[in-house]
Image 1 (cartoon, rainbow, N blue to C red):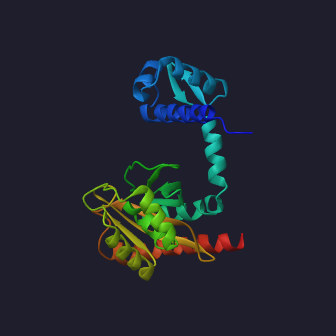
Image 2 (tube, one colour):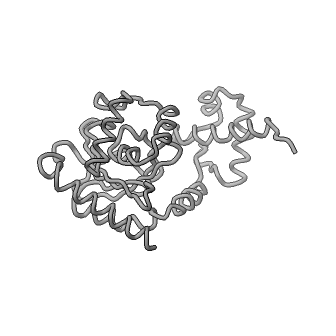
Length: 252
């Protein structure tokens, strides 16, 4: 049996349509066709198939991504052991720090948010479960990169590059490697306005049997993330949370 390139192309088109619906936050056939530079008839056919399988819904004349994707997302997330063991520690960390606490893993060279918890003083951010970000722009990403095999890090950087998210983002490979050496030495990583202006982050890796499973982080405004709280107390809290998740993962 041989692969049919037409079927592969059709699958790619369906995925592009779903992603466009997410980006546009819902759209009609004409808007989708314009967005993707596709014939309206092609978009219509794919939309109808997606609706038939309940991956797309139609509300007030607009097509939207259906909640059936939530079922798939929950399944994918729960296959990660730390996704079930980590949230209690993330909740505790958010309560202790009153900031935003996060649980993150690496997949396909991206940092993916599995879970987050908002403390009483947490600021609103663009993060949510499933959001993907460049690893080099974040504290948790650097915490993960520092403990991946060098060949894996090279592959990730070759694939995704080092694009700048802010003026503070590390965009030089040598500078990033120097920072990863520091992360390994300290046991934790910083993000000093490297992904979002005005935001700082402290993160620690979750390592079991010499394999990095993910990272824990706390993010907050630069105005509060400073002094001994930022340089001593917060790193200790983050590393402690990561250590508890490591122990629970080892003996689960």
